[in-house]
Length: 483
Image 1 (tube, rainbow, N blue to C red):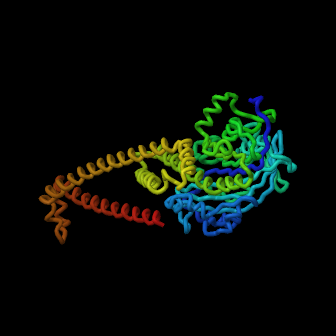
Image 2: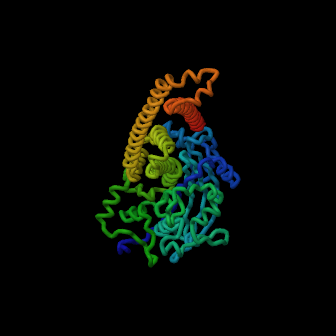
Image 3: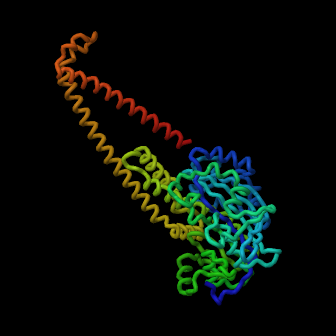
């Protein structure tokens, strides 16, 4: 639908970070990191102050000192580790400066890919961030609709809608029909061999795990000219990423003002309104402002820095919670006792080490991240995972009790028959040296006692070896987790 009240507005700048999660093949992180380093990616570190200016374009930078102070110590230790560690986030970044063109049926949009991040996380998860700056074709004024249409088209990894089918990316005189093809050939060419696709077993069309409709998450910054009015429709369109309709005209996905107002009430952070608004949706997190350029640059720097990492943490929490719930639904409680123990360990580790209710030291950041957590549904997901943990513990206790009862019955039978009956019938013949010839004249009951005696010895040895094996296996697992 097209609202007759919509009129085109221009932008001073439009900066976007497209984030998508992926799952890494277990045990392949070191090889993947080596491949990324060969492709030109370098480890990101707060100690390297040269990286404050390297990945964000000419006008923007991120203060490493401010980022460290912004997050609470236990959060900073996970996202900014001093040394590489599989239990923390590890970011590798590459400056690209690719000048590209997005061709659609109604407009051509020039954009620059400033840089890309690959962030490897615990639980064999990762994120790839593509950092872009949008420009209008032929250096003309960039419109708000063009920026939204670019975000809407570029976030679609695969062609799903008819509009996606008519969208192409041009880079170095080569045309790419799908965003996925462009990213995996030009931006992160070494990813595909390390992508874990086990979560997609049974799917007919999906080719990437943990996606909603095969689209990337968008973190965007829209700077209007100083003093330009930012209407409710503008904020709604930014949150919903409404670009153009099938006629190429500005599009808004609702014409009901009451609905738009209700949406903004639940998705908007208005501490600095009417000049700056933050709109949070399950597919986008955007800042819209009309303040003067110097202050707008500071807001953009914050979107690249503190808010970027806050968003990553919330996305990480959501995906791990979904992954743990999915693992529980796939476990066969009868056949996969080891998987049950591993899932219990993963849930406990996540709850104690990664699921922070408090992330930052500043009130405004805390309020925004609380809203992100609410819209992502973390509370309900976490409650479901805690119920899963309780169910697993209950099942494990019941299973252990049953096994202990069965074992007690078996051992009692062996003890009674071989200890009492066997000692009276065959124990004298088993003294050294063993009287094998006497066994030829045994009665049926003596053979029974002899068989129970030897089988009892075999069962006892088997239980001992099995216990030592499980104990050694647990020691190896604990050592690997510590590493």
